[in-house]
Amino acid sequence: MAAPAVIEMANKLAEECLAVQKETGEDRLFMQVGDVLGASSQTLEEAFLTAIRTRMAEIQGRTFLAKRLQAHRAAQTPE
Image (cartoon, rainbow, N blue to C red; front, side, top):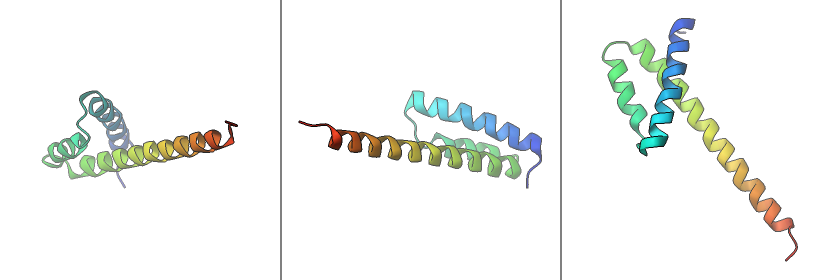
């Protein structure tokens, strides 16, 4: 397991990377960042990729739930 300082750095970098991905539309930018990190620190690379994947999974989960709720509400609305 990575040191708390490494995890904190990875979490901050993951948040920044996701913001840049959203603004630029480059949905695989995190892979390039991971490659850059891996060239000098495999530990930070692994922590970063874990942070990115968990955040992306959360986004997908929230999107799924929002769509499910929207469909449910649409089905409940009388026409």
